[in-house]
Image 1 (cartoon, rainbow, N blue to C red):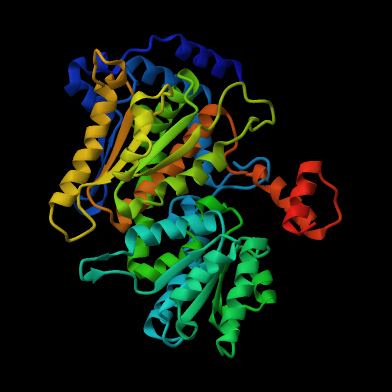
Image 2: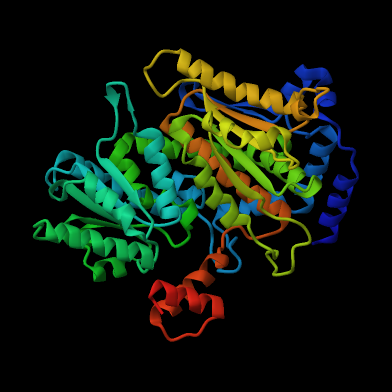
Length: 511
């Protein structure tokens, strides 16, 4: 850690830690300082509220000084300029260029790739490839989590209206049960296959893809490869595998997997929603990109979120962060954020390769309200762990049922944050709530393509801002690779392992 950064951390650690009830002595001023509405087009917006966290003016000042010492402004500029920010792999990280914000050449390339994808999507919707009712999308990690979340959030039917233009099934697990479930829901005669793999060598994805081809062939499809679209940064490998070059949708090597939803990896989203809605999703994300690029200090929403994250991880020793979506459409968001945050910032060395001298990413976990209230909120209210919580909700419901459903849902969401903060004393220790437990709330006007895009881009930039404050590289993921390498050794059958692993292999009959 640089001496300038260490000095700012030392100052932050020396600050008093006020309680939430004291911080709310002037609630109106606190709301003005820590609750902000982010505006999208046509009056749509998102409310970000960190007033129920322990951030105060002194800590915000301290974190702004830390950001300056960590050279946040220059590192943010490098991200948007397409400079090499993934230093261990010698790459840029140009996911924002996919949304039209970044190095001009990269933005132009992304626009070309999007035009190609839009043409294919619109041709399929017009019937150029015959009747297409289903799409099986195989990928893993970011190639699956992002599309699955976006389709689930945005392509649900609302009463008698809405719903997906094409029925999309995202399959990532190599467990054949996942693929069989998709087969059971699809008619091979009206099904297309999307294969999403940056390298087009990912063993789980390619094995699943081969099984889909075999399923189609067994059902009498004469040319199953003619029903495949490839989403990849390695077009030559896709063509070699059997995909016609006219149905290969490339994306840049500088787009990382967990940041790839905006590239051709978003093909299943565009198939489900239609291109106009996918374009709105891109523009919503770009609006957040411009805010992140142009706004300084605590007014910068992703940076302010990172200040809160660092406060709890570094200054209060919190090992986890919980995310609860009080909206069924966002049920997959905690899973998505697990990969985004833990794969990006779950590191133990700095960008220079030196050991990190403090905790990095907390464990991200969560669920869906109100289900989670009857499962894990006992620990949040009365357990011995201090867990900062994010609540995410929408003012507009995603259904046409009686308004009482949504009123109860939102009442529970807001009540949980209030209860965590206030607590409730009791003479009976088993019925006492200590309170002073932090939460933040992200309240969307509605779950739309634009607000969804802005929400995901916010979390991408929050992750990057956290990495800068910690001095780490959020864009590599070498920790994912060791287990895969050993799995290949097991498959090859030519390596000896520890006694436990050998016994397990023998018991399972794969030794």
